[in-house]
Image: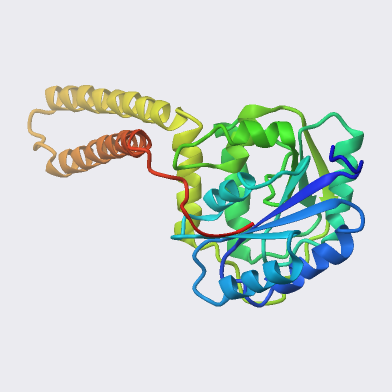
Length: 312
Protein backbone atom coordinates (compact mmCIF):
# COMPACT_ATOMS: atom_id res chain seq x y z
CA UNK A 1 0.00 0.00 0.00
CA UNK A 2 1.25 3.47 -0.81
CA UNK A 3 2.46 5.80 1.96
CA UNK A 4 -0.61 8.05 1.87
CA UNK A 5 -2.80 5.04 2.77
CA UNK A 6 -4.57 5.16 -0.58
CA UNK A 7 -4.37 2.20 -2.91
CA UNK A 8 -1.80 2.82 -5.62
CA UNK A 9 -3.52 1.70 -8.79
CA UNK A 10 -1.89 1.28 -12.19
CA UNK A 11 -3.94 1.11 -15.39
CA UNK A 12 -2.13 -0.46 -18.34
CA UNK A 13 -3.57 0.27 -21.78
CA UNK A 14 -2.01 -1.12 -24.98
CA UNK A 15 -2.72 1.48 -27.65
CA UNK A 16 -3.16 0.65 -31.31
CA UNK A 17 -4.85 2.96 -33.83
CA UNK A 18 -7.03 4.57 -31.15
CA UNK A 19 -6.54 8.27 -31.77
CA UNK A 20 -10.30 8.82 -31.53
CA UNK A 21 -10.89 6.99 -28.22
CA UNK A 22 -7.76 7.10 -26.06
CA UNK A 23 -8.05 10.76 -25.03
CA UNK A 24 -11.63 10.41 -23.80
CA UNK A 25 -10.76 7.15 -22.01
CA UNK A 26 -7.78 8.66 -20.18
CA UNK A 27 -9.76 11.75 -19.16
CA UNK A 28 -12.58 9.56 -17.84
CA UNK A 29 -10.11 7.43 -15.87
CA UNK A 30 -8.63 10.52 -14.23
CA UNK A 31 -12.03 12.06 -13.58
CA UNK A 32 -13.48 8.94 -11.94
CA UNK A 33 -10.45 7.36 -10.23
CA UNK A 34 -7.83 9.99 -9.37
CA UNK A 35 -9.77 11.17 -6.30
CA UNK A 36 -10.14 7.60 -5.00
CA UNK A 37 -6.76 6.00 -5.73
CA UNK A 38 -3.15 7.00 -6.09
CA UNK A 39 -3.49 6.61 -9.84
CA UNK A 40 -1.01 6.03 -12.64
CA UNK A 41 -1.98 5.35 -16.25
CA UNK A 42 0.55 3.55 -18.43
CA UNK A 43 -0.04 3.93 -22.17
CA UNK A 44 1.93 1.68 -24.54
CA UNK A 45 1.77 2.55 -28.23
CA UNK A 46 2.16 -0.64 -30.25
CA UNK A 47 3.45 1.14 -33.39
CA UNK A 48 0.07 2.64 -34.33
CA UNK A 49 -0.44 3.78 -37.92
CA UNK A 50 -2.59 6.79 -37.03
CA UNK A 51 -1.99 9.79 -34.74
CA UNK A 52 -2.25 7.81 -31.50
CA UNK A 53 1.33 8.62 -30.50
CA UNK A 54 0.81 12.38 -30.79
CA UNK A 55 -2.43 12.16 -28.77
CA UNK A 56 -0.71 10.10 -26.05
CA UNK A 57 2.23 12.54 -25.83
CA UNK A 58 -0.24 15.39 -25.40
CA UNK A 59 -2.03 13.45 -22.64
CA UNK A 60 1.27 12.88 -20.85
CA UNK A 61 2.14 16.57 -21.09
CA UNK A 62 -1.26 17.60 -19.72
CA UNK A 63 -1.65 15.00 -16.97
CA UNK A 64 1.85 14.08 -15.85
CA UNK A 65 2.88 12.49 -13.56
CA UNK A 66 -0.35 10.44 -13.67
CA UNK A 67 -0.04 9.55 -17.35
CA UNK A 68 3.09 7.74 -18.54
CA UNK A 69 3.66 6.94 -22.18
CA UNK A 70 5.93 4.44 -23.94
CA UNK A 71 6.19 4.05 -27.70
CA UNK A 72 7.40 0.72 -29.05
CA UNK A 73 9.76 0.55 -32.02
CA UNK A 74 7.63 -2.02 -33.89
CA UNK A 75 4.30 -3.76 -33.64
CA UNK A 76 4.62 -6.71 -31.26
CA UNK A 77 0.99 -7.52 -30.46
CA UNK A 78 -1.29 -6.88 -27.51
CA UNK A 79 0.26 -9.31 -25.03
CA UNK A 80 3.82 -8.13 -25.60
CA UNK A 81 2.64 -4.53 -25.28
CA UNK A 82 0.94 -5.41 -21.98
CA UNK A 83 4.21 -6.92 -20.74
CA UNK A 84 5.95 -3.64 -21.65
CA UNK A 85 3.34 -1.74 -19.65
CA UNK A 86 3.44 -4.03 -16.61
CA UNK A 87 7.21 -3.59 -16.46
CA UNK A 88 6.66 0.16 -15.93
CA UNK A 89 3.97 -0.07 -13.24
CA UNK A 90 4.51 0.75 -9.58
CA UNK A 91 1.01 0.17 -8.26
CA UNK A 92 -0.22 -2.19 -5.56
CA UNK A 93 -2.63 -3.41 -8.22
CA UNK A 94 -2.69 -3.16 -12.01
CA UNK A 95 -5.71 -3.07 -14.30
CA UNK A 96 -5.32 -4.23 -17.89
CA UNK A 97 -7.90 -2.78 -20.24
CA UNK A 98 -8.37 -2.19 -23.97
CA UNK A 99 -8.26 1.19 -25.65
CA UNK A 100 -11.67 0.87 -27.34
CA UNK A 101 -13.75 2.28 -24.44
CA UNK A 102 -16.06 -0.76 -24.36
CA UNK A 103 -15.39 -1.32 -20.66
CA UNK A 104 -16.88 1.40 -18.40
CA UNK A 105 -14.34 2.96 -16.03
CA UNK A 106 -16.73 2.47 -13.12
CA UNK A 107 -16.21 -1.30 -13.35
CA UNK A 108 -12.62 -0.85 -12.17
CA UNK A 109 -13.88 0.22 -8.74
CA UNK A 110 -15.90 -3.01 -8.50
CA UNK A 111 -12.80 -5.08 -9.29
CA UNK A 112 -10.63 -3.23 -6.75
CA UNK A 113 -13.27 -3.66 -4.04
CA UNK A 114 -13.54 -7.36 -4.85
CA UNK A 115 -9.80 -8.06 -4.69
CA UNK A 116 -9.50 -6.15 -1.42
CA UNK A 117 -12.32 -8.16 0.15
CA UNK A 118 -11.32 -11.61 -1.12
CA UNK A 119 -8.17 -13.71 -0.96
CA UNK A 120 -7.43 -13.68 -4.70
CA UNK A 121 -4.51 -12.59 -6.89
CA UNK A 122 -6.48 -11.69 -10.01
CA UNK A 123 -10.01 -10.60 -10.82
CA UNK A 124 -11.43 -11.32 -14.28
CA UNK A 125 -14.54 -9.69 -15.65
CA UNK A 126 -17.33 -11.53 -17.41
CA UNK A 127 -20.28 -10.20 -19.36
CA UNK A 128 -23.96 -10.97 -19.63
CA UNK A 129 -23.74 -9.90 -23.26
CA UNK A 130 -20.63 -9.01 -25.24
CA UNK A 131 -20.91 -6.24 -27.79
CA UNK A 132 -18.25 -7.63 -30.12
CA UNK A 133 -18.80 -8.73 -33.69
CA UNK A 134 -19.88 -12.30 -34.41
CA UNK A 135 -16.36 -13.16 -35.65
CA UNK A 136 -14.69 -11.77 -32.53
CA UNK A 137 -17.13 -13.56 -30.22
CA UNK A 138 -16.59 -16.80 -32.13
CA UNK A 139 -12.83 -16.46 -31.71
CA UNK A 140 -13.18 -15.70 -28.00
CA UNK A 141 -15.41 -18.73 -27.42
CA UNK A 142 -12.99 -20.97 -29.27
CA UNK A 143 -10.08 -19.52 -27.27
CA UNK A 144 -11.84 -20.24 -23.98
CA UNK A 145 -12.74 -23.81 -24.94
CA UNK A 146 -9.18 -24.55 -26.00
CA UNK A 147 -7.84 -22.98 -22.79
CA UNK A 148 -9.99 -25.42 -20.79
CA UNK A 149 -7.90 -28.24 -22.25
CA UNK A 150 -4.51 -26.63 -22.85
CA UNK A 151 -4.21 -24.54 -19.69
CA UNK A 152 -6.57 -26.51 -17.42
CA UNK A 153 -8.60 -23.33 -17.02
CA UNK A 154 -11.67 -23.51 -14.76
CA UNK A 155 -14.60 -24.06 -17.10
CA UNK A 156 -16.67 -21.29 -15.53
CA UNK A 157 -13.90 -18.69 -15.99
CA UNK A 158 -13.99 -16.34 -18.98
CA UNK A 159 -10.54 -15.10 -20.02
CA UNK A 160 -11.39 -11.44 -20.43
CA UNK A 161 -8.75 -8.91 -21.45
CA UNK A 162 -10.23 -6.56 -18.81
CA UNK A 163 -8.79 -7.73 -15.50
CA UNK A 164 -7.06 -6.67 -12.28
CA UNK A 165 -4.08 -8.30 -10.57
CA UNK A 166 -2.10 -7.70 -7.41
CA UNK A 167 1.61 -6.91 -7.10
CA UNK A 168 2.54 -10.51 -6.25
CA UNK A 169 1.05 -11.78 -9.51
CA UNK A 170 2.56 -8.93 -11.53
CA UNK A 171 6.00 -9.85 -10.20
CA UNK A 172 5.48 -13.52 -11.08
CA UNK A 173 4.33 -12.68 -14.61
CA UNK A 174 7.31 -10.43 -15.23
CA UNK A 175 9.68 -13.32 -14.50
CA UNK A 176 8.79 -14.51 -18.00
CA UNK A 177 11.21 -12.82 -20.38
CA UNK A 178 10.80 -14.97 -23.49
CA UNK A 179 9.46 -13.55 -26.78
CA UNK A 180 6.00 -15.16 -26.89
CA UNK A 181 4.00 -14.16 -23.79
CA UNK A 182 0.38 -15.12 -23.31
CA UNK A 183 -0.88 -13.17 -20.29
CA UNK A 184 -3.69 -15.53 -19.31
CA UNK A 185 -1.39 -18.53 -19.59
CA UNK A 186 1.14 -16.82 -17.30
CA UNK A 187 -1.61 -16.01 -14.81
CA UNK A 188 -3.03 -19.52 -14.75
CA UNK A 189 0.36 -21.12 -14.22
CA UNK A 190 1.22 -18.70 -11.39
CA UNK A 191 -1.95 -18.79 -9.26
CA UNK A 192 -5.18 -20.61 -8.56
CA UNK A 193 -6.59 -17.74 -6.50
CA UNK A 194 -8.87 -16.27 -9.15
CA UNK A 195 -11.96 -14.13 -8.73
CA UNK A 196 -14.50 -12.86 -11.22
CA UNK A 197 -16.82 -9.87 -11.35
CA UNK A 198 -19.76 -9.28 -13.65
CA UNK A 199 -19.19 -6.15 -15.73
CA UNK A 200 -20.88 -4.13 -18.43
CA UNK A 201 -19.67 -4.34 -22.00
CA UNK A 202 -20.67 -1.49 -24.26
CA UNK A 203 -20.75 -1.20 -28.03
CA UNK A 204 -17.64 0.17 -29.68
CA UNK A 205 -18.22 3.86 -30.29
CA UNK A 206 -15.52 4.40 -32.93
CA UNK A 207 -13.79 2.19 -35.49
CA UNK A 208 -13.65 -1.59 -35.45
CA UNK A 209 -11.77 -4.35 -33.66
CA UNK A 210 -8.07 -4.68 -34.47
CA UNK A 211 -8.21 -8.45 -33.95
CA UNK A 212 -7.86 -10.11 -37.34
CA UNK A 213 -7.89 -13.83 -38.07
CA UNK A 214 -4.09 -13.70 -38.37
CA UNK A 215 -3.75 -12.18 -34.90
CA UNK A 216 -6.16 -14.71 -33.39
CA UNK A 217 -4.19 -17.60 -34.91
CA UNK A 218 -0.96 -16.11 -33.56
CA UNK A 219 -2.57 -15.88 -30.11
CA UNK A 220 -3.73 -19.48 -30.26
CA UNK A 221 -0.28 -20.66 -31.30
CA UNK A 222 1.20 -18.90 -28.28
CA UNK A 223 -1.23 -20.81 -26.10
CA UNK A 224 -0.61 -24.12 -27.86
CA UNK A 225 3.17 -24.11 -27.95
CA UNK A 226 4.23 -22.01 -24.94
CA UNK A 227 2.13 -23.48 -22.18
CA UNK A 228 1.32 -27.05 -23.17
CA UNK A 229 2.82 -30.10 -24.88
CA UNK A 230 -0.63 -31.48 -25.69
CA UNK A 231 -0.24 -30.73 -29.44
CA UNK A 232 2.79 -33.03 -29.53
CA UNK A 233 0.93 -35.72 -27.64
CA UNK A 234 -2.00 -35.28 -30.01
CA UNK A 235 0.36 -35.85 -32.96
CA UNK A 236 1.60 -39.08 -31.38
CA UNK A 237 -1.97 -40.28 -30.76
CA UNK A 238 -2.99 -39.45 -34.32
CA UNK A 239 0.05 -41.34 -35.55
CA UNK A 240 -0.99 -44.45 -33.61
CA UNK A 241 -4.60 -44.19 -34.79
CA UNK A 242 -3.74 -43.88 -38.47
CA UNK A 243 -1.07 -46.57 -38.21
CA UNK A 244 -3.74 -48.88 -36.77
CA UNK A 245 -6.16 -47.91 -39.54
CA UNK A 246 -3.46 -48.60 -42.13
CA UNK A 247 -2.72 -51.99 -40.60
CA UNK A 248 -6.39 -52.94 -40.60
CA UNK A 249 -6.81 -51.81 -44.22
CA UNK A 250 -3.72 -53.77 -45.18
CA UNK A 251 -4.99 -56.96 -43.57
CA UNK A 252 -8.40 -56.43 -45.15
CA UNK A 253 -6.82 -55.99 -48.60
CA UNK A 254 -4.76 -59.19 -48.24
CA UNK A 255 -7.78 -61.22 -47.13
CA UNK A 256 -9.90 -59.76 -49.94
CA UNK A 257 -7.23 -60.66 -52.50
CA UNK A 258 -6.94 -64.21 -51.17
CA UNK A 259 -10.69 -64.72 -51.34
CA UNK A 260 -10.97 -63.22 -54.83
CA UNK A 261 -7.66 -63.36 -56.77
CA UNK A 262 -9.29 -61.68 -59.77
CA UNK A 263 -9.67 -58.36 -57.95
CA UNK A 264 -7.37 -55.64 -59.42
CA UNK A 265 -4.93 -53.84 -57.13
CA UNK A 266 -6.49 -50.67 -55.68
CA UNK A 267 -4.65 -47.65 -57.13
CA UNK A 268 -7.19 -45.16 -55.78
CA UNK A 269 -7.15 -46.58 -52.25
CA UNK A 270 -3.35 -46.50 -52.29
CA UNK A 271 -3.25 -42.84 -53.32
CA UNK A 272 -5.80 -41.91 -50.64
CA UNK A 273 -3.90 -43.83 -47.97
CA UNK A 274 -0.56 -42.26 -48.91
CA UNK A 275 -2.10 -38.78 -48.97
CA UNK A 276 -3.72 -39.19 -45.56
CA UNK A 277 -0.62 -40.64 -43.89
CA UNK A 278 1.65 -38.07 -45.52
CA UNK A 279 -0.64 -35.29 -44.31
CA UNK A 280 -0.52 -36.57 -40.75
CA UNK A 281 3.26 -36.82 -40.87
CA UNK A 282 3.61 -33.29 -42.22
CA UNK A 283 1.27 -31.99 -39.52
CA UNK A 284 3.34 -33.68 -36.80
CA UNK A 285 6.62 -32.45 -38.29
CA UNK A 286 5.20 -28.94 -38.63
CA UNK A 287 4.09 -28.91 -34.99
CA UNK A 288 7.50 -30.12 -33.89
CA UNK A 289 9.10 -27.46 -36.07
CA UNK A 290 6.94 -24.77 -34.41
CA UNK A 291 8.21 -25.82 -31.00
CA UNK A 292 11.82 -25.94 -32.18
CA UNK A 293 11.51 -22.56 -33.92
CA UNK A 294 10.23 -20.91 -30.78
CA UNK A 295 13.01 -22.51 -28.75
CA UNK A 296 15.53 -21.15 -31.27
CA UNK A 297 14.13 -17.62 -31.07
CA UNK A 298 14.04 -17.81 -27.27
CA UNK A 299 17.63 -19.00 -27.07
CA UNK A 300 18.66 -16.15 -29.35
CA UNK A 301 17.06 -13.70 -26.89
CA UNK A 302 14.54 -12.19 -29.27
CA UNK A 303 13.10 -9.33 -27.18
CA UNK A 304 9.44 -9.15 -26.19
CA UNK A 305 9.46 -5.48 -27.16
CA UNK A 306 11.75 -2.49 -27.66
CA UNK A 307 10.82 0.94 -26.29
CA UNK A 308 11.80 3.73 -28.68
CA UNK A 309 10.39 6.70 -26.74
CA UNK A 310 9.77 7.08 -23.02
CA UNK A 311 7.65 9.71 -21.26
CA UNK A 312 7.75 8.78 -17.57
